[in-house]
Image (cartoon, rainbow, N blue to C red):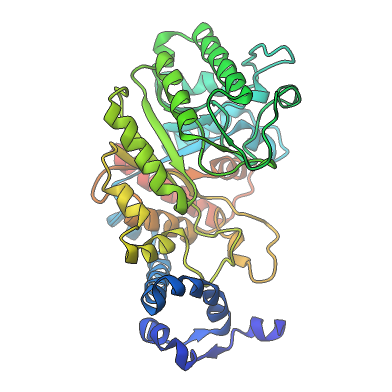
Length: 427
């Protein structure tokens, strides 16, 4: 059976799948058919029409993959509205094993890639001692470099959830003394012991920033992200964060950064509508002087599904359009001030793919994969015809490979792509 799978024998779909054959207008491989089959469960909600939508979304995805074979120069012709930004985690950079100064990595990203907007995550367990006293030493090189007046910073510092898995960066001494400790799967609500401790810590952190940096330097923190992907479960405890607690974190941040933009992002297509409605409610209340920004995270190669032969999150959103519930389109047409790509996958899920998961190594190692991700996001997530921020996820690894002389030609082409996008914007 394994040998048969590897041969990718081309077959015609059975008669019961005539709708698929007519949509694809070409034969499909056994592997593709088997991987599309689980999506038939949607058929119970709308029968062949839903399946047709899924097939159509999948074919559009395949066409985008073909378009992504264009050169970087050709890609730029129809994607001039993009500006590449990046999330930067010094912990992620350190995890690669060689000692590279955080400021050197940021300098390469700025000078060589034209990236001047950085999202920074400040982990609770990295900035406190056992007495809950704030110590910024680990993050000082990163903060010093990014607050010099030439960059814009999006700050993700709490209340609870900071980017980079497992995203639970709460000190052990806090977790061990919670009364009570929330059970697994709990939605953390305002007023609970954990929420109160998180608020107290975040307040101390903001106070420490104010003592360590001038008002001019802090003015370059232009956007606050209260919690990363608040509606998605995180850590071994699989906690989520209640929308009212997200709002509490935003209100606290606005006390220290009254003119800042506010970002709330989403990493699960099924949660996008809730995030959009939350942001529209925040905007309607009029407390935010800056922009209200809806961030979408897009990972074309989902590590929890077979990597090839299935619609990605954008494809599934399009399939939901049969119920007038395409959450990405609703988000684009919403009353929020801006829609951005907060995390666009530019690093591999794994360097050691299992059988049938070869595509999981491509993000971050293939310029075509990078073009594909940006093309899909620009067409389906970002607002049409508007200058848009496209945040790449995995800049630490790309910079690390560049600074340690380990780039392949594909990595060099990815760098060329980012340069062409960002420096043409500055021209």
